[in-house]
Structure formats: structure tokens, C-alpha cells
Amino acid sequence: MRRVMAVLGVLGLGAGVLAGCGPAERPYTPQEAASPASGQPAPSPSKSESGAAPASGPENLKIGGDKLRVRIEWPDDPDPLLKLVTGYYVASRKALVSGSDRYLKDLDLELTAVREAYDWVHGYTEEDMTVRGEARLYNLRVAALVGKGAQVNACVDESEVRVLSARTGEAVEPQPAFVREPYLQSVLAHRGDDGVWRIRSFGYGEKGCTR
Image 1: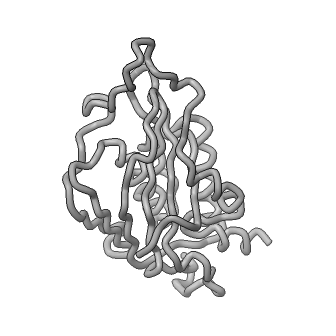
Image 2: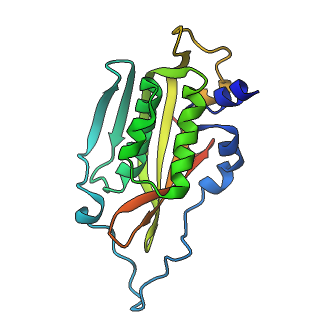
Image 3: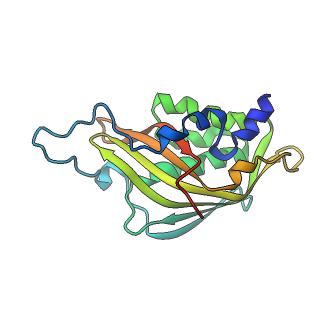
């Protein structure tokens, strides 16, 4: 059963994920993120708070040499917050390809997200599974920004990615059919008093993305 659940969870659509698909598609409204007393909307984060903005247009990354290729389609004038979702995606796939969770240590995660991220990776590495192929991240957007809370979404197309045995290099059978379609990856983030945005939790959805 453990192996079945791990396979069903491949590339972000595990059993726990499916249970949260509906809420993940709704904008995130943090409890502590009330509007300022002046009545003015909360300002967007500056580059000093969330890092330099990425360049517009496509970015092609290679993970593990040429084992996994990731194409990130940055929108025009991308918000620096978009790097929260792309950074997590790339780090988690580096962990799967290498078989080591050390790449997750570079992420800005709150304690609630640390366990989610490490459990997700270990669900594959402990079952001797890895991934190969080509993935695409597109339609990146900040779905909600309220005070110190934000939801950042990305569409993920992993139809050209396959789950393999890290030991034999053979494809895991059966490959889960429902992950052949694009899905929605979300991160819910909170800005600390130090100005750093950290991921608080993750969400996924089966709807909302087309190729």
C-alpha cells in the first residue's frame, strides 16, 4: 500500500493533496493580514524583501545533468514572489533526481511546510523512485496578496515526465494516469518581521490549468 500511495502522489498529487484540491484553488486570506489603519491597501513587497525579480520569458533548467529538464515560462514583469513556487519546484525535483533532501535546506520554509516538503521527497526516495523527462511551469501568478500573506500559483505540465526505479532505471508500472494532465501547484506564504517571505504550506488542484 505504501508503494501505491507513493506512486499516486507522484509529481505533487498524492492522497493528502487530493483531499485539499478544492481549497487550494481559492485565494489565500491570512487571518493576521488586515488592511493598515489608514485604509490604504497593503503595498507589494519590494525587491529588498523578496529578492530580485526574475527576467521575463522562458528559462530552461537542467537537473542532474540532463536527467530532468524544466522550462519556466516567466510572465512579463514577473513579481519576485513567483520565485517561491518555482524555487520549491526546482529544489524538490533536484532532491528526487539526486536521491538527497539536501536541496530543500536552501528553501525559506516555516515549520509547518518543512515537514510537508521533506515527507513528500522521502515518499519517493525511500521507495527507491526518481523522475526523468521534461516538465513545464507556466501561467505563474500571485493569486492573492493581503498584508503579510500571499498565495502564489503555477500550472505544472509533467506529461513528459516518468517515474523510474532509481536502482534499475526502469519505469514504475503502472504510471498514474491522472498526472498526465497539467495541474495547479500553489504555495501559501507569510512575510516575517525580518521581511523574508517563507512558505507556510502547499496546495494542489486538478483543475484550472490547460496546456
